[in-house]
View 1 (spheres, rainbow, N blue to C red):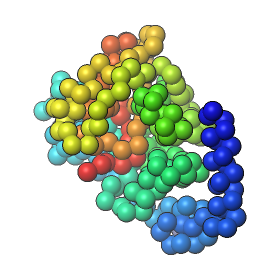
View 2 (tube, helix red, strand yellow):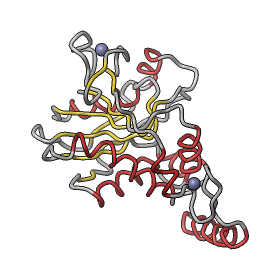
View 3 (cartoon, protein in one colour):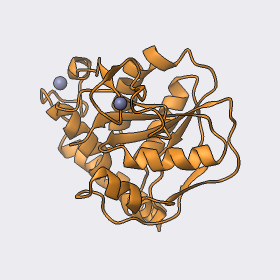
Length: 238
Ligand SMILES: [Zn+2]
Ligand SMILES: [Zn+2]
């Protein structure tokens, strides 16, 4: 069933490319969803903040001394400035319009900012935030897993898929505040097996809003033995 869906999708895409060539979402130049120039023009986030109080500037987005103990995460690193319309369009195309080619551009963007800060750390292991299998079937792919695989192939990071599992379908988080989201996500994630206490785990998600999903995932990772757990997101949601 899944194969038929992909074949149909591929055929549809080939026909669309033939009659409606891809155009850069920013300058409309033909050839890709974003051209090199416009990709280079996207602003990377230079000043990270503590993910809990969201006010104190931090080098890597680590939890500040005042918020210490309030999170299972060491910190959350956000790659690009979130106000950028072009970036939002790209993420939307990637997630909802099945434009998987965009993942290469997004992976490039992540490496450009994140690698400067983290790639000297040894034993980095990427773990994509899982979707519930029902949602993954509906979408056809997990956007974070796709990005993780690409990042793994471009860098020294290992990618672990199918280790962190989503055990429960949770109701939509859209209108919920952080505390409500945390309750909604309680025990929604589970780690299959034991994790290594000496590795640094990076939880990858496309957009971080309140941080509750990353927090719930981090709790599961720690329960399985992880000691260093970071969040990594392309952008902040509103
Ligand atoms: Zn362009
Ligand atoms: Zn803080």
